[in-house]
Image (cartoon, rainbow, N blue to C red; front, side, top):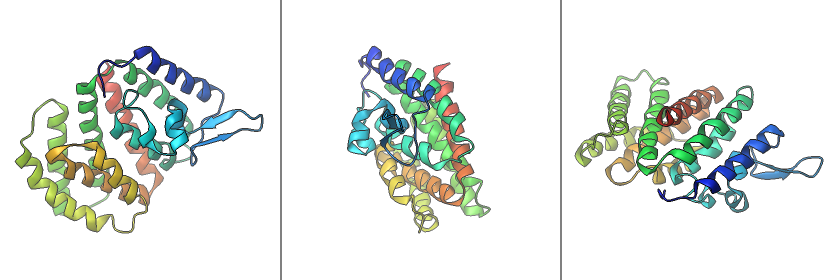
Length: 232
Protein backbone atom coordinates (compact mmCIF):
# COMPACT_ATOMS: atom_id res chain seq x y z
CA UNK A 1 0.00 0.00 0.00
CA UNK A 2 1.52 3.31 -1.05
CA UNK A 3 2.35 5.93 1.56
CA UNK A 4 1.59 8.65 -1.01
CA UNK A 5 -2.07 7.87 -1.50
CA UNK A 6 -4.62 10.63 -1.96
CA UNK A 7 -6.08 10.86 1.54
CA UNK A 8 -8.93 13.00 0.27
CA UNK A 9 -9.93 10.33 -2.24
CA UNK A 10 -9.86 7.69 0.51
CA UNK A 11 -11.99 9.94 2.73
CA UNK A 12 -14.51 10.31 -0.09
CA UNK A 13 -14.81 6.54 -0.44
CA UNK A 14 -15.57 6.16 3.26
CA UNK A 15 -17.99 9.09 3.16
CA UNK A 16 -19.87 7.05 0.54
CA UNK A 17 -19.85 4.07 2.91
CA UNK A 18 -21.12 6.19 5.82
CA UNK A 19 -23.95 7.54 3.69
CA UNK A 20 -24.98 4.06 2.60
CA UNK A 21 -24.84 2.85 6.21
CA UNK A 22 -27.02 5.76 7.35
CA UNK A 23 -29.53 5.02 4.59
CA UNK A 24 -29.66 1.28 5.30
CA UNK A 25 -28.18 0.36 1.93
CA UNK A 26 -25.43 -2.02 3.08
CA UNK A 27 -26.13 -5.69 2.33
CA UNK A 28 -24.55 -9.05 3.06
CA UNK A 29 -24.43 -12.23 1.01
CA UNK A 30 -24.22 -10.35 -2.30
CA UNK A 31 -21.93 -7.79 -3.86
CA UNK A 32 -24.46 -5.27 -5.19
CA UNK A 33 -28.17 -4.77 -5.67
CA UNK A 34 -30.96 -2.20 -5.57
CA UNK A 35 -33.70 -1.43 -3.07
CA UNK A 36 -37.40 -0.95 -3.79
CA UNK A 37 -36.77 2.67 -4.69
CA UNK A 38 -34.12 1.71 -7.21
CA UNK A 39 -31.26 3.00 -5.06
CA UNK A 40 -27.90 1.24 -5.17
CA UNK A 41 -27.14 -1.25 -2.41
CA UNK A 42 -23.75 -2.83 -1.80
CA UNK A 43 -21.77 -4.99 0.60
CA UNK A 44 -19.18 -3.37 2.87
CA UNK A 45 -16.34 -3.75 0.40
CA UNK A 46 -18.30 -2.74 -2.71
CA UNK A 47 -19.60 0.33 -0.86
CA UNK A 48 -16.06 1.68 -0.58
CA UNK A 49 -14.72 0.00 -3.71
CA UNK A 50 -17.18 -0.13 -6.62
CA UNK A 51 -14.27 -1.70 -8.50
CA UNK A 52 -14.50 -4.75 -6.24
CA UNK A 53 -18.27 -4.79 -6.66
CA UNK A 54 -18.01 -4.76 -10.45
CA UNK A 55 -15.40 -7.52 -10.37
CA UNK A 56 -17.31 -9.42 -7.68
CA UNK A 57 -13.92 -10.00 -6.12
CA UNK A 58 -11.83 -8.39 -3.41
CA UNK A 59 -8.97 -8.41 -5.91
CA UNK A 60 -10.68 -5.44 -7.57
CA UNK A 61 -10.14 -3.21 -4.53
CA UNK A 62 -7.33 -0.71 -5.23
CA UNK A 63 -4.27 -1.14 -3.03
CA UNK A 64 -4.24 2.61 -2.35
CA UNK A 65 -7.59 2.18 -0.62
CA UNK A 66 -6.97 -0.91 1.56
CA UNK A 67 -4.12 -3.41 1.86
CA UNK A 68 -4.79 -6.45 -0.31
CA UNK A 69 -4.84 -8.85 2.65
CA UNK A 70 -7.45 -6.77 4.47
CA UNK A 71 -9.63 -6.29 1.40
CA UNK A 72 -9.76 -10.09 1.09
CA UNK A 73 -10.90 -10.31 4.71
CA UNK A 74 -13.78 -7.80 4.42
CA UNK A 75 -16.32 -10.06 2.60
CA UNK A 76 -16.23 -12.81 5.27
CA UNK A 77 -16.35 -10.14 7.98
CA UNK A 78 -19.53 -8.88 6.30
CA UNK A 79 -21.09 -12.27 5.58
CA UNK A 80 -19.98 -14.78 8.23
CA UNK A 81 -20.98 -13.20 11.53
CA UNK A 82 -24.34 -13.49 13.26
CA UNK A 83 -27.38 -11.61 12.02
CA UNK A 84 -27.82 -10.10 15.48
CA UNK A 85 -24.33 -8.59 15.64
CA UNK A 86 -24.22 -7.45 12.02
CA UNK A 87 -25.83 -3.96 12.28
CA UNK A 88 -23.54 -2.85 15.09
CA UNK A 89 -20.53 -4.36 13.34
CA UNK A 90 -21.28 -2.40 10.16
CA UNK A 91 -21.44 0.85 12.11
CA UNK A 92 -18.18 0.14 13.89
CA UNK A 93 -16.44 -1.03 10.71
CA UNK A 94 -17.28 2.24 8.95
CA UNK A 95 -15.92 4.28 11.85
CA UNK A 96 -12.78 2.28 12.69
CA UNK A 97 -11.64 1.25 9.19
CA UNK A 98 -12.54 4.65 7.75
CA UNK A 99 -10.28 6.38 10.25
CA UNK A 100 -7.47 3.85 9.74
CA UNK A 101 -7.53 4.09 5.96
CA UNK A 102 -6.90 7.83 6.12
CA UNK A 103 -4.06 7.76 8.67
CA UNK A 104 -2.19 4.43 8.64
CA UNK A 105 0.92 3.91 6.56
CA UNK A 106 2.38 0.66 5.23
CA UNK A 107 4.31 -0.12 8.42
CA UNK A 108 1.23 0.43 10.59
CA UNK A 109 -0.92 -1.83 8.41
CA UNK A 110 1.80 -4.49 8.66
CA UNK A 111 1.56 -4.35 12.46
CA UNK A 112 -2.23 -4.57 12.20
CA UNK A 113 -1.89 -7.64 9.96
CA UNK A 114 0.00 -9.59 12.59
CA UNK A 115 -2.39 -8.48 15.34
CA UNK A 116 -5.25 -9.79 13.21
CA UNK A 117 -3.46 -13.08 12.60
CA UNK A 118 -2.88 -13.44 16.34
CA UNK A 119 -6.57 -12.79 17.00
CA UNK A 120 -7.59 -15.47 14.49
CA UNK A 121 -5.24 -18.02 16.02
CA UNK A 122 -6.52 -17.20 19.52
CA UNK A 123 -10.03 -17.98 18.29
CA UNK A 124 -8.84 -21.26 16.78
CA UNK A 125 -7.10 -22.16 20.02
CA UNK A 126 -10.39 -21.79 21.89
CA UNK A 127 -11.90 -24.56 19.74
CA UNK A 128 -9.49 -27.32 20.73
CA UNK A 129 -8.18 -29.11 23.79
CA UNK A 130 -5.53 -31.04 21.86
CA UNK A 131 -2.29 -30.25 23.70
CA UNK A 132 -0.14 -30.39 20.56
CA UNK A 133 -2.47 -28.00 18.72
CA UNK A 134 -2.62 -25.64 21.69
CA UNK A 135 1.18 -25.59 21.74
CA UNK A 136 1.32 -24.66 18.07
CA UNK A 137 -1.34 -21.99 18.58
CA UNK A 138 0.49 -20.42 21.50
CA UNK A 139 3.79 -20.36 19.63
CA UNK A 140 2.33 -18.81 16.49
CA UNK A 141 0.44 -16.26 18.61
CA UNK A 142 3.75 -15.33 20.24
CA UNK A 143 5.44 -14.94 16.85
CA UNK A 144 2.57 -12.78 15.58
CA UNK A 145 2.51 -10.64 18.73
CA UNK A 146 6.25 -10.07 18.51
CA UNK A 147 5.96 -9.18 14.82
CA UNK A 148 3.12 -6.77 15.63
CA UNK A 149 5.39 -5.11 18.18
CA UNK A 150 7.95 -4.49 15.46
CA UNK A 151 10.36 -7.35 16.11
CA UNK A 152 11.89 -8.92 13.03
CA UNK A 153 11.35 -12.67 13.42
CA UNK A 154 14.02 -14.87 11.78
CA UNK A 155 12.71 -16.91 8.88
CA UNK A 156 13.86 -20.08 10.61
CA UNK A 157 11.53 -19.38 13.55
CA UNK A 158 8.54 -18.99 11.26
CA UNK A 159 9.43 -22.00 9.16
CA UNK A 160 9.87 -24.37 12.10
CA UNK A 161 6.40 -23.72 13.47
CA UNK A 162 4.57 -22.93 10.25
CA UNK A 163 5.21 -26.41 8.85
CA UNK A 164 3.67 -28.03 11.94
CA UNK A 165 0.79 -25.57 11.93
CA UNK A 166 0.06 -26.11 8.25
CA UNK A 167 0.02 -29.88 8.69
CA UNK A 168 -2.59 -29.60 11.43
CA UNK A 169 -4.66 -27.10 9.44
CA UNK A 170 -4.81 -29.35 6.41
CA UNK A 171 -6.45 -32.02 8.56
CA UNK A 172 -8.61 -29.80 10.75
CA UNK A 173 -10.02 -27.66 7.95
CA UNK A 174 -10.87 -30.62 5.72
CA UNK A 175 -14.43 -30.23 4.53
CA UNK A 176 -14.83 -26.61 5.66
CA UNK A 177 -16.59 -24.71 2.92
CA UNK A 178 -14.66 -21.58 3.78
CA UNK A 179 -11.26 -23.20 3.18
CA UNK A 180 -11.02 -21.89 -0.39
CA UNK A 181 -11.38 -18.21 0.52
CA UNK A 182 -9.16 -18.73 3.53
CA UNK A 183 -6.34 -20.09 1.41
CA UNK A 184 -6.68 -17.20 -1.04
CA UNK A 185 -6.68 -14.61 1.73
CA UNK A 186 -3.69 -16.24 3.40
CA UNK A 187 -1.71 -16.26 0.17
CA UNK A 188 -1.87 -12.45 0.17
CA UNK A 189 -1.71 -11.95 3.92
CA UNK A 190 2.01 -12.48 4.43
CA UNK A 191 5.21 -12.78 2.46
CA UNK A 192 8.25 -15.00 2.80
CA UNK A 193 8.57 -17.35 5.74
CA UNK A 194 5.40 -16.12 7.45
CA UNK A 195 3.20 -17.17 4.52
CA UNK A 196 2.62 -20.72 5.80
CA UNK A 197 1.78 -19.46 9.28
CA UNK A 198 -0.69 -16.99 7.78
CA UNK A 199 -2.28 -19.76 5.73
CA UNK A 200 -2.71 -21.87 8.83
CA UNK A 201 -4.26 -18.99 10.72
CA UNK A 202 -6.77 -18.36 7.97
CA UNK A 203 -7.63 -22.05 7.63
CA UNK A 204 -8.15 -22.22 11.37
CA UNK A 205 -10.49 -19.24 11.11
CA UNK A 206 -12.42 -21.05 8.39
CA UNK A 207 -12.83 -24.03 10.67
CA UNK A 208 -14.16 -21.81 13.46
CA UNK A 209 -16.49 -20.03 11.06
CA UNK A 210 -17.89 -23.36 9.90
CA UNK A 211 -18.63 -24.21 13.51
CA UNK A 212 -20.53 -21.08 14.53
CA UNK A 213 -21.23 -17.53 13.36
CA UNK A 214 -20.40 -16.28 16.84
CA UNK A 215 -16.76 -17.21 16.18
CA UNK A 216 -16.71 -14.63 13.42
CA UNK A 217 -18.36 -12.09 15.72
CA UNK A 218 -15.49 -12.52 18.15
CA UNK A 219 -12.80 -12.48 15.47
CA UNK A 220 -14.27 -9.41 13.79
CA UNK A 221 -14.41 -7.57 17.09
CA UNK A 222 -10.78 -8.48 17.77
CA UNK A 223 -9.75 -7.42 14.25
CA UNK A 224 -11.43 -4.04 14.66
CA UNK A 225 -9.82 -3.71 18.11
CA UNK A 226 -6.43 -4.30 16.46
CA UNK A 227 -7.05 -1.62 13.85
CA UNK A 228 -8.41 0.84 16.41
CA UNK A 229 -5.36 0.36 18.66
CA UNK A 230 -3.06 1.42 15.83
CA UNK A 231 -4.96 4.67 15.23
CA UNK A 232 -4.77 5.91 18.84
